[in-house]
Image 1 (cartoon, rainbow, N blue to C red):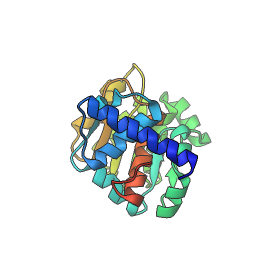
Image 2: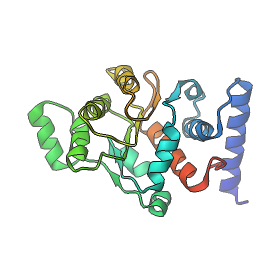
Image 3: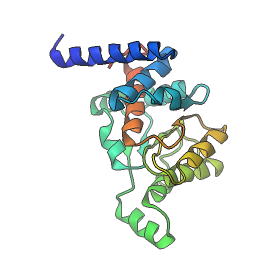
Length: 214
């Protein structure tokens, strides 16, 4: 085993031992997600914050295996997703937040670029059967919930915006709807790093199964 792989293996062993000592026990699919988040953040509080609707992880895995598009609210999430695994499964990522059209429309409508980016994805017929990952902006997550209420049907929504204004409320709005599966981190914590960790965990579940360590 080369040194980078050994370091990663040791890290996950430490994470699992600490989680056991804290009294946490997750089924294998959720364990992969929680362990990857903690590996990315060194923050064990996330073990208490991650929530998923019934069947959400399987829905995400199935969608990835079917080559679903992945829509992100910010480019920080988009660039963090494993390119080799995306290529292997044939998934394409989209983020409209920086497009000139979205910027102009957001300014004209007095809303955020992140929210308009989600609307643009729906207008481009990309949202149905996709995985939508919101790692930064509560306004983007609110827009996704609105689009679901209007009839859009993503395969899975990852709702982990971070901050103090509208963050907890936007996650609650996502969890209240029962039409589309979801994964969230409750409270104010979240962020692009968390969204990336969740997506990469799902990609590993899709390509390697629940026993994947890295």
